[in-house]
Length: 110
Length: 113
Image: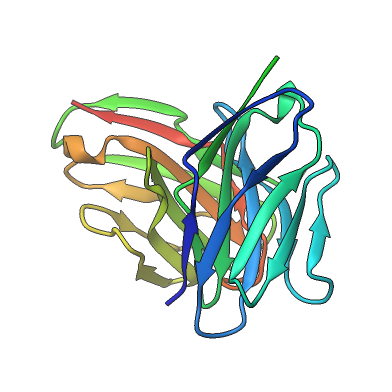
């Protein structure tokens, strides 16, 4: 069965700094990979997903993630964060069902 | 507007008093599921449903029941709530269990005293 490990529970950064949220997965077969974002007091929203094709996927608000099959990783990056990016981010892997990581709380400080 | 709704959003109850959290989706999705979110544990699946009248246990089903009598509704039932069921609960729906984006409801914060 698939599983997901998010390597950092909390990531504090200053505004306009780059950020990387790390995600590793384990699976025996081909998988689909997702990043979801949860803003305070809200449900989860899809940020981006990898299903097939190009290993680099992008979101509309400047985040990107790269599927690395050899390292079984799907790290999320943004070159310059804003205060509004403060949220909890969940990596998820979908094989026969969907499994979520424990989450990474990103805090962007002014 | 495509959405998943849950009610109530907040609930404080006492041990042993049966409660139901409703979930409804308007996207004609076949697959629906319930998760609980606890600090440091992420989201853990409680129950899921592949279609009407088809439900199955997730990772943490103890103490919960579900039903799927209609495609759009998937209520979560706690017959005898206990304090360890204090949590944030999310309902989600999607086109299928694998490879599909899941759409989440706004969450229900349950406190059992």
